[in-house]
Image (cartoon, rainbow, N blue to C red):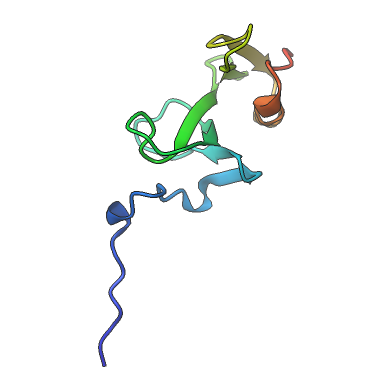
Length: 118
C-alpha cells in the first residue's frame, strides 16, 4: 500500500502558508499576525489579494502594518494606493491598545485613511 505524495509547502507557489496567522479574512483582504516571526518588527500586516505577477508572486499586496512602540502605544500605517488623489500616500495612527490599532487598520481597508486616535 503506497502513501500518497503531497508536495512540500515550498513547492506550492500559489499561496504562502499563513496557517493560523490569519486574524481576519473577507475574501479580498486579510489581516495577518506576525507575532513570533523571527526578524519581524511589525506585529501584523494588512494584505490584499491580487493577480500574481513578478512584483507579487504570491498574489498578495501589503497595504499596511502595525507595531508596538517603546512607550507601549501601538502604531499603525496604511498605504492608501490607487490612481486617484490619494495614490501612494500613507496614513498613520497611534493607538492605546493593539486591538484599537487592529480594528482601525482592518476598517481602513476600504477607505482612504485611518481614524487617528491617541
